[in-house]
Image 1 (cartoon, rainbow, N blue to C red):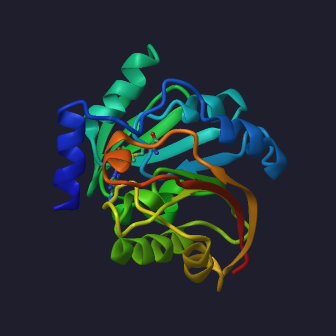
Image 2: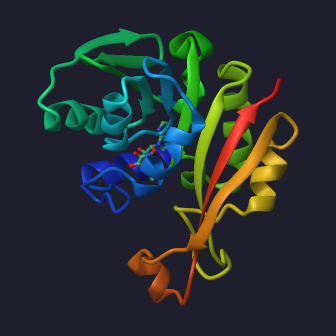
Amino acid sequence: MEHDFWLERWQQDQLGWHLEDTNALLEKHWPALGITRGSAVFVPLCGKSLDMRYLESLGHAVTGIELSEKAIQAYFEEGGETAVRTEQFYLIRYQGPRTTLYCGDFFDISAPDILGVRAVYDRGALVALPPALREQYVDHMLRIIPEHAHILLLTLEYDQTLVNGPPHSVTEAEVRALYGGRCRIECLERFTADRLPPHFTKAGVASAQEAVYHLIKDH
Ligand SMILES: C[S@@+](CC[C@H](N)C(=O)[O-])C[C@H]1O[C@@H](n2cnc3c(N)ncnc32)[C@H](O)[C@@H]1O
């Protein structure tokens, strides 16, 4: 059901979340994480996000996972790159010049696929998932990334009783409940969003908060 929803969005080019430039919050906060040049970075539920281009420009080896093969092909085509496609059990691997994108379900990617990853960039991933899946997402994430890995997490908070996600509302209390037992968590920034999706405004959502967290996996 979830999968069909996203694949249909890609099929119909309804990509309201996609930004035509690097996310300003990534540019602002990533350098402070101290992830050295050349380190491997994992981008879950990556779409064709240009944030991966920014991470590449910092010398990172980027690995992403995305359900839609159309999204992955678009990422490489729009970047003028050729990627080598290989089928690998449940996943299809696209090896580009600087980036590896897996096509498939996040829950099918395993630790060897992202070996040596130092950091995770989560924008539009946790908030894309409904509550029950968020718990499984975090369990799986913490199972596949190594100890001391960093996570830069961007979230959105709004009155979920007025409208359904995605993007879903994920409060700081939920971030702490999901990750708190196994990660150190610092909220780096919180502010009122200057733009809301049109269907939020229509449903009476007057404002939303954006938040940025830095997490470090303890064990
Ligand atoms: C809100 S978009 C965000 C994309 C990207 N992170 C960005 O910031 O542009 C969520 C993406 O996750 C993908 N997706 C949803 N569920 C997934 C899953 N279980 N495994 C892999 N990708 C998934 C969707 O196809 C969609 O491209």
